[in-house]
Image (cartoon, rainbow, N blue to C red; front, top):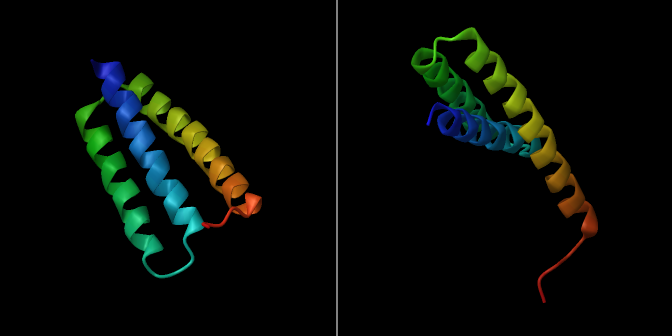
Length: 81
């Protein structure tokens, strides 16, 4: 069950960071604060060094995946009919 929480926290944090890096107005800082708050909640809940390291590693990997997906999506140029 702890690994599921690790996965979910990392996934949500990566989505928030990807939104932060791809939005270009003032509201992007809300996503940054959300990721910071989520990270603080995770570090308060799981005190083991291993879980904290894995949280950061998995969140960074997911961040790169979501950023790549967003970049590919914006470059395809698909428009609605």
